Image 1 (cartoon, helix red, strand yellow):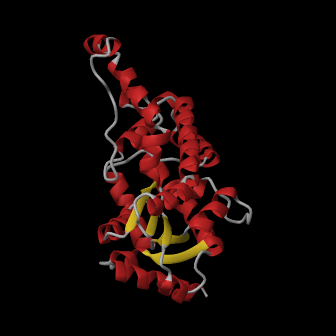
Image 2 (cartoon, rainbow, N blue to C red; image 1 turned 180 degrees about the vertical axis):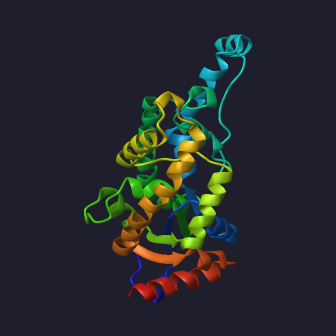
Image 3 (cartoon, rainbow, N blue to C red; image 1 turned 90 degrees about the vertical axis):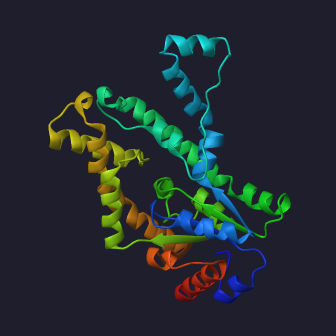
Length: 287
């Protein structure tokens, strides 16, 4: 790992961390605290995906919808209007809207083949964005003068890596650049994430094998055809399974490549000093 002890971490003139874990457990919360401290550069993987690697997909999809309206079609064809996405660190809705949900088109669903195509686009985009970490870590110091660096990853990072493989390309690169920190939730956090998701289901990104099995199981258990799947019902049904699927993958990443802190510990962080002490304790616990 980049830091072998708590003292090495505390004494380091340049601190680099990468947060991973389920969305909603504090990755962005603590990133915002550190960014607000003034000496940390915040690199958001999801923001990079939406602006660099999927920006054209998102804009073209919006244009395709606008082209169905004769009035907007004429304006677009004459270059009289411009359609783009307004992605920010706090608003990544354009990315999730593009990913969509599979099922009945009358309820806003996508055909499963189109859904899988967009899932594959996202997987490629996320891997590229993760591999850009070294560039942004260097850029943050060289161009902007920030001594410290945060990489804030999405919940699906565990889907594209094999933590048990010591030669995994993505994990080798990330661990060489940053201290990898798993923000771990407990059973109560999981239940709250499920309740939150049930109230407002959002598009997700899944490992292809997991998605194929979940889709087949859903069709069989519900006794429906692909065209009649309720999109929100499917992703609600799948979400708790996705959490269970990802938990051991995160755990393996932390065991082989990084350290673990809990969501409760992260929620108690109020300052940069609090965070540095928390990571120091995590390094001590690992050693």
